[in-house]
Length: 176
Image (tube, rainbow, N blue to C red; front, side, top):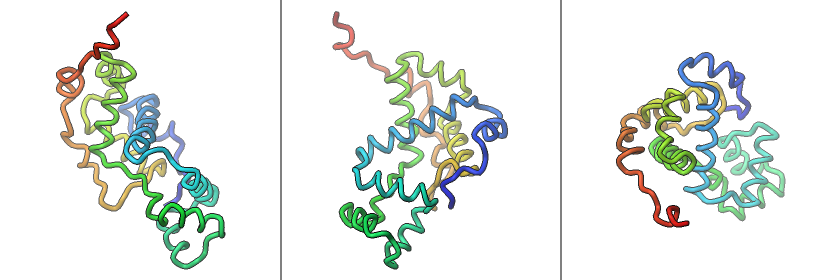
């Protein structure tokens, strides 16, 4: 699959029709943050290989084939060796992990207003996050794993429970 989106993001937003551009941007940003929280920061070698892949529009599958057949530049092959192989480039997160990360990031940024702000973007259920993610996948903005399904986003949590019931003020933040 190509790394280059084949539909401008504004067209994706128009086609989906239910969420503003800001909702798509927030979900995309949260994917990167969630990946970093789950997998750690990218190493210099990971960045080097990712940049090389992006410049040449090389997919993860193609990287694996090229690595197994010795068709990589020496510096990229060496970087992959130091990383532990091409499979270490996979920084995938599940739909469930993304939903919880979005919840956490929204609460960190907007506190008790998080649920209202997301609702202003028509994001009121974990399924809405899945709709945005799969629209981005369908239009080449994101890649998915073969076993990823839009159903992975179904009923991850209710927004009332996730944003209201379990919100806690940290005592350190209340001190003056």
